[in-house]
Image (cartoon, rainbow, N blue to C red):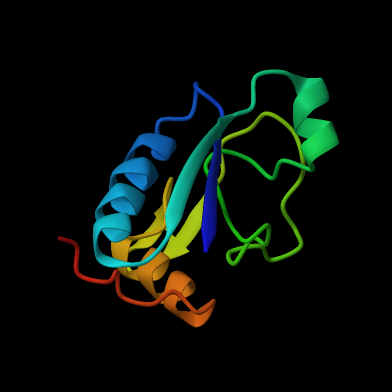
Length: 107
């Protein structure tokens, strides 16, 4: 399973998501890639819904359909209110719902 973290440097929430995805990558059989979106043109071309955006095999599990595209900071509804990043539990639930399995034991 491929997970892509798209981000815009000026939105600090992407760093929390990167840490949470790194932790989940140690537990689940996923590959995480980081993709920096640097220009308004790139944001439009990618239909970038704001930073951070997590794509699981190309799909955004947190999209509501109301997010504008462009270089902006994204807000997530969490159990604790609005935040700049989904919680660890929300990310794990999204990954597992998409079919992520535990990482096989290594040598």
